[in-house]
Image (cartoon, rainbow, N blue to C red; front, top):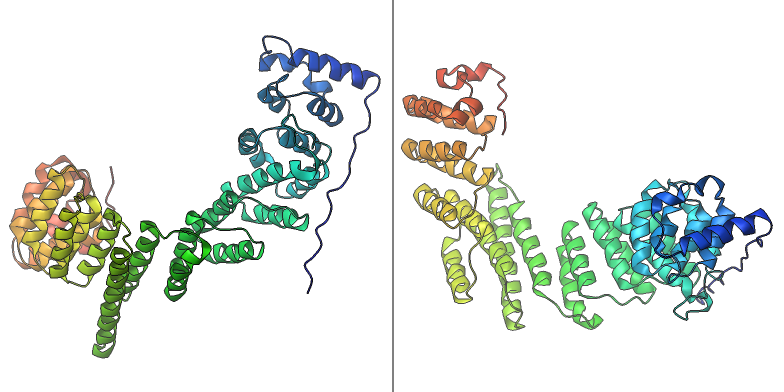
Length: 458
């Protein structure tokens, strides 16, 4: 099937100015080009008589060296009339057009946007003779490309798709940077299938991807759970003339580790064995990606190590974790909050609450602030090990940091104290301001099981 022939850009002209219209535009142009430039407030007296036709002629007559673009933009009311708005987009540089769209595009309704897009295409030839020497239909490319990027940046994917289809129909294509904005917006809206579909359309239109495009495509497949397809993309990236980076491998490693972590506990022994087998395969595959990174001399960063450490900690393979920590020191990479959190999770799952507490203290000494899930994991580990003096210290530290425990943690904490007849140890928490604020009195008496208490937050 032969390729569809591109539609030519339409020819369009404005009615000539005459009489009062000509006098008004001449006077306003003279006022705008005066030295020094007039204040924006001085233009208010012209606005009542400024029709879309007069403003359109003014934009065509004024040059950037003569009239600052911010003065012309201040003449556009919200929502802006489509004809002068389109002409102003063509007359400005791409960066100025992007700033103008960021301020005025939100005021354009969903139903009025097709009319604006129509006028941008309609006025492309009219505004084509540019001060930088551009001519012909090429003047339409910057304005339409900036409009496409602005819609994508505003997460208006339906409008961005409409702009892309219009450009393609006229034989025009956006730059790869604008396509990256569209894919990024689709991922931020949790619509990875749209990102994958748009990438395929990019390839059909012969738009060459770059490193950012490839990495976002990997993430899209991983978000969809299609890790096998992500592996194929990783192999094809060099064929596109793009280098695989640390982010490329980190994305795939995180997906493998996340897949193993999402398997979850099982009731039946057979299912549990199958899930353990899945986790083993997951760790092995993630390790293979790690080995491939080393073989291809891709520099590993702290994100790579943190992802591998978390995956191994979730599987309880602490010996391999210690090996990675030695690699981390050899590479002269410093541990961050994510490293400490992953290690604490691993030792808590191994029921080694003392080691988890040591890491928690080391984390605070290093200047990092543990979050609530980290504290909750450590407290649960101490409760399971019946180390009630230690759990009181951790709970006190959490309350002093103004972190409120939720109802599930409070029930676990006080249930274990009650069963061990150690409830008197919790009385020291009442001396803390946050201990009174975050822990209702009914927990100390054991009546909380029949109450619907709500824990406040800072």
